[in-house]
Length: 93
Image (cartoon, rainbow, N blue to C red):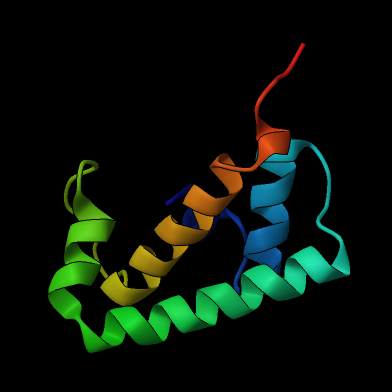
């Protein structure tokens, strides 16, 4: 939701924002292209299954902000999950 609310208006801007928040760096072109493609495929999948989109977008956070496309929000939730599960996101010592 943070990427949607303050990350910009395009998928690339939002992915760059997510990388800066999570990893304190910008994504490489390859990383950007992969996540942009993943986002687009996720939107298609969630448009085909609105019930799944609602589950992903609202559990456990609750109802989405007014006027937000549920399929888009679910896709951004998936992109956020990818970022949060990167090895680079975890501190290792």
